[in-house]
Image 1 (cartoon, rainbow, N blue to C red):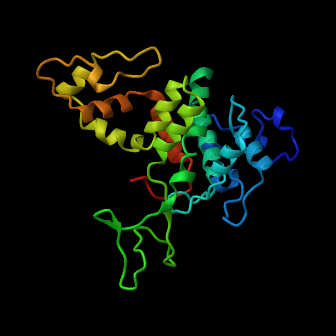
Image 2 (tube, rainbow, N blue to C red; image 1 turned 90 degrees about the vertical axis):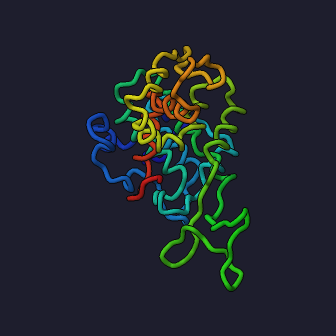
Length: 271
């Protein structure tokens, strides 16, 4: 990192050798850990270093986290799907992945995904919890009365999860930026998007998809809600299928999903 560069001057700077080939290959062929700040739970980075790294990874947008937003960024993701550890490392990697996946986007659309990346996970802090086994709404326990976890490390210690963080993050973004409809859509649906390709494939060639293709999105590229559409008699497209179709038809969400998947250190899928 470049050290004491004033925050106001931080735009597209990062170590030059790390970004010079970013438009040609994902991460310019660099190992992901080399692009992160320290990944160890005991070594949280300073606010200045976090600001600097995030804004260097961004191409156009300059982010200025509030104290509350910084607290969300400094949440440790204690699970094997996110071996990059700190949430800010996930943000850094996603922004760097966007330099590859978004290289053909207009500046306006690129900025939209940058904002979606930044806002996609602050809800993890409030929703963070251990992954318990549940039965009838209650946590299952072993013979000693200790909770039974669904996901643990090799030493038996529990891993954490953040179920519902996508919707919580969308709530936080909506409160801060109610006018930014597209980003709010991308944030709210980014977890569901990990399954959209598989679900959309099931619609290929069906009558239902033909019905979907007759619907026009609005000026922001967003489709109407199911109950706002005058469906033709005998339509074969269910509400659930319509949801998957409109997700898979949003090119920005597709790119956001690719950045989300690439922006992790893990050999595991999101499934």
